[in-house]
Length: 130
Length: 135
Image (cartoon, rainbow over the protein chains, first blue to last red):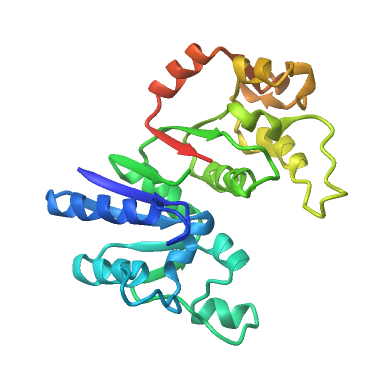
């Protein structure tokens, strides 16, 4: 089965990202396909490489990046939500006249159309958040 | 993409306490370009999103309620409002914005977009969807 996931909450503050990650892992282990993981609302904060959690805790951002590297999972951050919250790749940073970017490896920034497309193309779109 | 899916955007949150309503509406507007079979539901505090006479001037937040008037032009013409959610908040359909659309199959006659459904009826609408977006 082809799944897409939508993550609507930031890391650490809310369990949604952990649950989404565990769900994604189970999907892949079950031999299913992940079409896309779309990060929206505060969920875009899952994609900053500047996250520095205490060493004895899980690194949520690196965990997503590792999954993308290992399984070629498409991790998409919504551009409009990202702009509001200060998540930028090099292009976005330049376009908006900022002095830095912070996107983590394996993530890419794109539009809301990617979410709609995920809904159309996937057998199931599963949402994680409140 | 030739496949058409039935998509329901479920709005559960008040318009200004959190950003879910505003960013949810942005998804609906972008999604309109994909020409799917789209509808919206307003349940719980979500009914406050389409309340008449919203005024945010004291809170420094953007009053985005006029955007709901544009939904008809985006061919989002089915706005389901849950009766029980209105009742529980002491509201009636007259407290809501008179949202309309122009029916191209009926000589562009202006028709109301809002349809009030009972909780049971709305559950039936949800069960008939391919994709649910929750905001």
